Amino acid sequence: MTKTTGKRAREKELRLKRIQTLRDISDGNLRHSFKNDDDDHDDEDSRNIFSEQFWNHIGREFHLKVNDGLDSLLTKEARVKADAHAFGIEQETFVQELMQEHSRRVKEDGYTRVSIAETAKENELFSSKREYERKSGFQRECQHLTEMIEFLDEKCGLNPTWSLVFDNYWVLARRVEKIVQEISGGKENRLNFDALVWRVRNVNEEDEKRGESNNTATMTAFTPHRDRQPKDTRKSFREDESPKYCTIWIPLTNATCENSCLYVIPRKCDEGYTEGDDDTDLEKTPLEKCLKDKKAYQNITACPVDVGEAVVFTHRTIHWGSKPRDNYQGEPRVNVSFGFSDDSFEKAYLKNRNGVKVTEDAEDVQSLPTLKERLVLIASQMIAYHERFPPKNFKALKLLKKIHDAGKSFLDERYREIIETEYIRATSMLAGRRKNENGDEEDEEEDDDDDNEDDELDNALDAMLDAKAKGRGDDFEDDYEEEDDDEFANDPNPDDCSDSDPERPYEVTEEDVFFGNATEEEIITAKNIHRRSIGKEELPMPKEREVSRVNVREHWSEYLKRPENKEKVDDAKKLLGIKS
Image 1 (cartoon, rainbow, N blue to C red):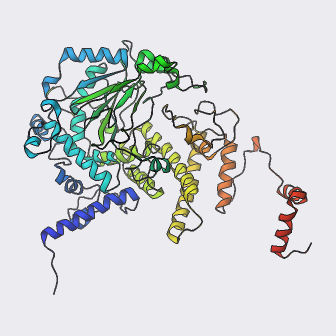
Image 2: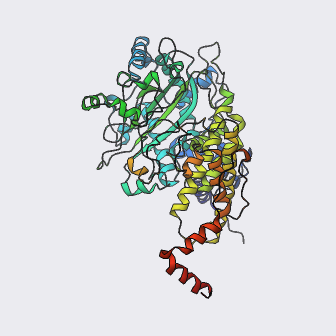
Image 3: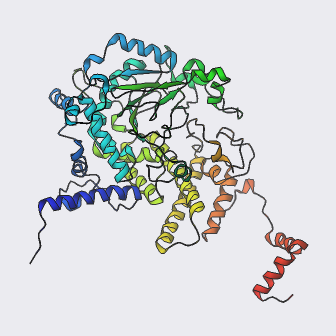
């Protein structure tokens, strides 16, 4: 007699399968062909992350949806539906005179705080159903996203940026684009799809030092940095000093000095803002130059913002997120950021969105990215920001690359090159981390993973050599960021604070090899050390620049003759059964 499963039990079973699929993404255990699969069968859908049905089932309990009946190019009617669906920003907040004042502040200070939505009275916290109903549509939408982000973070171990699969963010980005354009100098600054989501909470120091990759332990705010480091800084501004790149930082929960908010250095205190940073100065970082004396520290500005507000800042503004107060017990800081760029400075990451303009009818709006475009963008962003959001293991990184490869034709060529290079860096980072953490005892499954990792690391080194041969080895400089001193305690090159002087002689580390700071000979030497360790044939050195080699036989002969090594030699002879 065949046993049947009730509908409710079946739905619960499928939900657990979908949650497990999300965990498998984090662990790198998802096995999928990554083809467009429109099959609506429940069993297949529970593993198909490219299925709208999969994400709509995940988002149902949080009132979030993917492609909820929105046409590829939204009509007026579809826009009305979208307005009711997500982020009901009141048009009254978009006031011309106010925007002009914000524009002035962005030019003079490098940042401004702006209201983007009407909120409920006093923006207070709500604890009952009646109080919840008093919330504005914007606040409720933010709460839904915050709950989804908590679910992804706590239950699935996924970075909050994965919540970008849902329509709500892209409807919001489309709306605030008008505000950013007014503030930052015109319609040339369009959404470029550099988007990230954070959930910053208290992290104990032990977990932070270990760098655990469960996302909840590593989801700390960014340390001081600039968003972009153009070669010619002045060309990244227009003649009227309006920036060609701006970021809007939108809180989904109130961002306070207690739970983490943005801090900035105003333009007037930052000599490198328009002139550019002097990479040859290894004595001081750009932040240290801004903080020359005690009085200068008073220029550091906190930017707490409530739900319904946002911070807009330029690509040259030094900014960072504070750590939550040590004994803070309230809600974590949750926010999303979007980048907006002039095509002459940086093209949109999604190729199909480059050059897309609003139609002549001002009431019409741009299309939202497809689900596959969103997933490819999310995976690519996780690779690009691997240092800030480390993948849990090599398999997880490889899965991100597989998703990226499945839709890399969607991506702008320059952005695609950046992701390829960052993947090489991420591969080396994981290899180094695993080497430091693993003991001698490993099971067979781990041995298989090691073989795959060795092959992929070897491929990554080949790719780095190819990139350097094509002149792209040093193209992708990391943004300026001041790190904690203890991270460099064992650095053999403590004075090498940037990639700006690759010709300066120094001891070559694995990081130097993968970050493009070493010569071709040094890279091949390090590569051969790795190849020897896995039993592969060594690569030849370039003939025109042959590197001198150590005579191993002569070296060991001298070693054995030294008096201080006599006991070691005698012990070795006994062990090998060699008579003196």
